Image 1 (cartoon, one colour):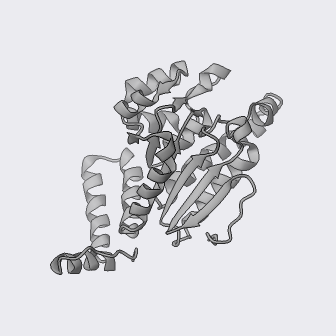
Image 2 (cartoon, helix red, strand yellow):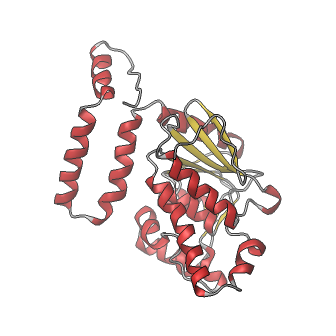
Length: 271
């Protein structure tokens, strides 16, 4: 179901909308922005609804108070999980995985603005985003083995190796150690590092640049980045041929040609 980006008022995180960009802010700074059962579910439902919300062209995900997210709340999630039977545990792990599916499934590019603590499920949310800007103070860790769990949480074993490589992902997922901001940039997890004071500005600027682009085509690009993971090269090339032919039938493609011919900058409208 579509959401109204102007009036949308989520209960468990902050929301802002301007210039085609929606900004989701995890806002429990006194606890380093942990996730709860309720915030997981509301984030999942929000990203699912963005599929039908064409007014939103790009998304920024950020944290308040100098940190991104400390992951699942120890007292509100981890404690109750130790008391659950298997059906409840499986319902929870499927629900958290559905957040990643929803983030990957929405057509809008997602820019994560990372600072300070970015661990556990917070690191997963960063991983599930399309682009990541970070400050030099960002510390990212997939902490699951530190609490006696496997590193294969919320798609980490599928997605993380594709971003930073199998060996590096294996190290982080087995050990739970911190990946420094410099390592993250060098390994390709962070697209670039920016100073803390410029993080929001840079993330918003990147999202706005995407929002003014050919947003229908951006959605096709994201779909292909997702679906081509598990197909042969021949199948991938055929999929891209069909996807590109669809984009060639859009008005944005025609606008770009007409603007080029007139030596002007194209104004894309996402159709």
